[in-house]
Length: 431
Image (cartoon, rainbow, N blue to C red; front, top):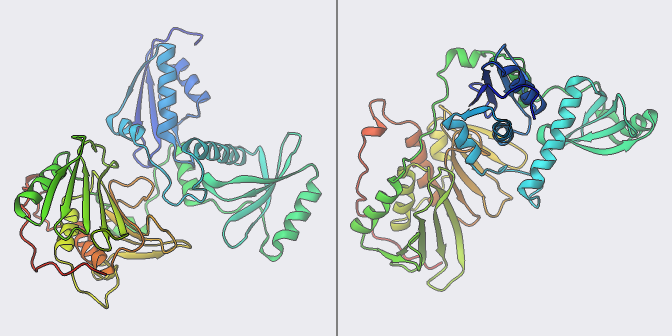
């Protein structure tokens, strides 16, 4: 229990510069006691009344929710801003997490361990002697100021940094590190990652420094997200305007099945999907009426309707494109490409949308999502391996157009169009 009466008000909001960091503002006669509790829970002061929670595991909303609940139990008055509450309620996962067998709780524990290592380095409790790049990850050797096994080898960066080995003797730890990484060894700690720099700026109460690019270009545009009910209207328009789609209801009123007359395409719509990241549509195509599944797609509830429109258009009248690559419309629209060890991404000029290819993935081979963070997308469309390239070309063309709407177009005043009939008769789907 607090030492003073819990006569204080604490407000939690998202950090304006470090997403998804959290700001806490305390006011009232016993605000000092509230700030003391917040400090114990990982918040750090950036002003007389303001504290910030910034972590390298990007789990700030989760820990802010825990802090709010604990303060409420102590009797403090607590309120959480709607945008932060939405982040708290969102069940999200790392899109490219290297340990897919971990449960969400195990992932959070790995991240918490990495956070402690980060904090130990930042506070000087863990001194890094040298580091190296092993070709895939950053590794390091360091010594704790105290402890039984004080000398450690570290592996990874940010939320994936772990203790790989422990030693009782510093000389042995350093010699073994040099033996393992030879000419790649460099003195001191590795340069801070972009995320670590952002975290430290937030903890010091600093804003992001302007860059030459930021001084000459417009700020990123917020990603467009479908409003609640838009997908329902689209589904109704589909059945009204295109006779080749038949409507089926399951035993539960929560789901509607749209079956194509070819008997090779099936779309399932979840009426209960309300949050922007909930899966609203599941679409699959099969190799014949009783054949094996060729590919699977999932579409979240926040996905802009024009992109779903493009998908339905292709299923009704597939394009015949033999030479272009799926990213060709994005390249022509000026999207920037970036290559990573396990994926390639194309990002809209205003950073409102991203298209990603993971050539070694099975379930999420191709992904289109809102914003520039695959781990916290505003919306997402995911395709499994096997989806035709001409299908992707039709989708990316629609995505390029949606990311660069006409200046006079006002989204809130644009009525949802009825689906026109397909431009060409559907071709046979036997493969």
